[in-house]
Length: 133
Image 1 (cartoon, one colour):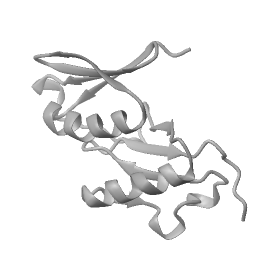
Image 2 (cartoon, helix red, strand yellow; image 1 turned 135 degrees about the vertical axis):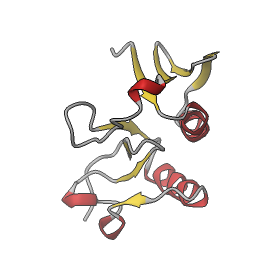
Image 3 (cartoon, rainbow, N blue to C red; image 1 turned 90 degrees about the vertical axis):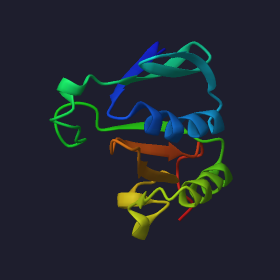
Image 4 (cartoon, helix red, strand yellow; image 1 turned 120 degrees about the vertical axis):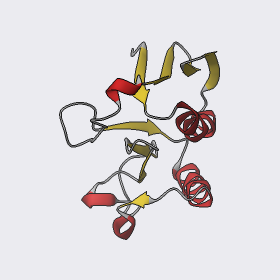
């Protein structure tokens, strides 16, 4: 089991505003807050967001470089994926691969892909992963 994930972010407020409602929609609960960070927890696993020091902001993040490409979470169902898509759109979050959504890139997963404020790609997948195409 994964213990925790810690993500350094460029703007803690933007990131926690973005991730807070989403993680709570996925069953996570607020866990901890301190000056430079905040976390949410589901069972024994938690996700931490930490404000990166200014001296490390210059290079920025890009998912195609060495490092984390994306985070994928299970939604409750296909209906839940669809409901979250509407909430994302209402929050002006751009849906990636819109032209092939919800089977982006030929994937058999019923999912939605989008980016957080630092452009970390996020995937929400329905548990019944094989399509009925």
